[in-house]
Every structure is written in structure tokens, then in C-alpha cells.
Image: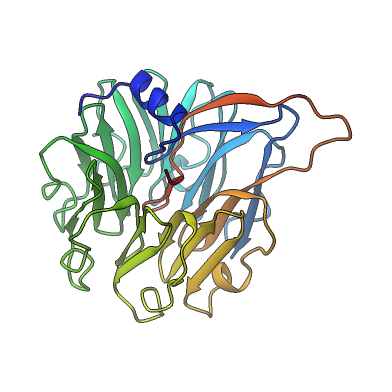
Length: 334
């Protein structure tokens, strides 16, 4: 594949967006605010930062992360092992991902910063080199995508989360699940690896034509070019059978017992275990531009209302924005 960041940007400007490579077209006075819902065990909801300058959001394990337009990171919620307090203080980041009580961020040079819980090498074994173009995290493993489409993995390998990663180049998107991961090839086919007790690997679609992929706890979700959703794996709470049947979705996210999808009109669909607040308290109305979900709380970005006087439209480079919790990517169709 051999695509550097400049090539990714040129592709995007032609209207093709893959795995979180995003430019936002918006009025300078219109930003994006964070909306959070679900359980508030660690302040995932009540401590979510205010403001309208956010361009990416991620969360898992009771922790939330958000990326500002200047490339600085906001962190809140569960601070076990420094998941919040050890988040980088500098700016200049272009992507974020959330593991279980871990955080990951990608600098503009493609180097990775990792912080938080480290009992499986999730932090200490993070790659030291630069040149990565995307990151994604699972339960206790993390994945990074090189510019040639090769995947690098580190962390827990009890179910092949690391050793089972495909070795060939040519991937354009990555996502993590509890004990495995998913990757999307440039031809729209999906690779799956890791724990397979519920068919989360063996039942992955075999045909091509997909433009996005995300992982739940024991599930996979994929987005077709027409905006239809494919779901597979564990179905004890309707994670698979209750996935929306219509087309027109532009983003997907998954976590324990739930799936979320974003429609082209900016509204959110949530399905899975009806007993959890990530379903029952999902926001209504439009204006949403990104979604992410973790084990207790879900997050979305919403276009903030402009003031009375708004400026002209501007192209705002948001960089490589990864909206992933156990695999979440912001995707727009061709």
C-alpha cells in the first residue's frame, strides 16, 4: 500500500475516508461538544469536559478521552494506574484510542504515546518508532497500523490477540475487541483473529465491499459501502439480531452487550441489552458527528449551536481521528 499521511489526506479530499482519517468542514465558530450517557461510576458522565473544540472521543474501562482541535487531550473518569492523571499534557496529537484503563495517542509524526495500566505490557511494550497512521485498542491489547498497511500488536496474548495478527500489508483500518481484533483490507474484506468461543472470528463476513469495522466484547460489526451494517458473534442480548436493518449509516461502535451506529442525518441508533443505560439513555435528535462506547458509558460528538454571527466555512484538518473503544472508527462513505 505504502500510503503516507500526505497520500491519506489527498484521498480524503477526493471524498474517500478510511478508518478515522478525517477533515472536518465547518464554520470556524461551530465546534463539537461531548455528549455522554450510561453509568457514571467513575464520573464518566458528570466529569466529561465542556467546550466545543473537540474533534475525537474515545472511552473504556470507566475512562473517557477526547482530542481537541489543537491536538491536546482531555481525560476524565477512572484514574486507576494513572489512566487519567498520566495522560499527555502536550498538544500536537492526531488520534486517540482507549483500552481497559489505558490510553493511547498518536503524534503527527506517527509515534505513539501510551499510559495507564501496564500489567500486560500495554504501555511498556508500545512501539518506539514513528510512521504509524492509526491506532486501536482492545481489552488488554493494542494495535497500530503502519503506512504500508501492516499491523503491529502488543499487550496480552492469552487468546492470540497479538500472535494471531495478520502479517501481510494492505490493511486500511483496525479495531479491537475484548480478546482479539479486526482489520479491513483495501479491497473491503475483513480479517479477524483472537478468541473465537462465540464465533466472533469464524463468523466474520467473507465477502468484500466493507468500508468500516468495529469490535464489541464478543462481537464484530462492519459497515458496507451502502451504509448497511453486518453483525456477528455473541447474540445473548441482541447484539447481532437487533442491529438495524436499514442502510445509510456512516459510523459504528461496539462494546460489552451493545452496538451503536451513526446515521448520515446525525442521529444515533443503539441496540443490544435493553437493561443498560447505554441503550435506554442514548440521545435523540441529530447533529452528531462521531460515536464511541465503553463498558459502562457511551460518548458522542455533537455540532454545537453557532453564535449569532458565524464566520465563513473553513477546512479544519482533524488528522487521523480514531473514535475507538474496543474498536471504534469514524467512517464516511464514498
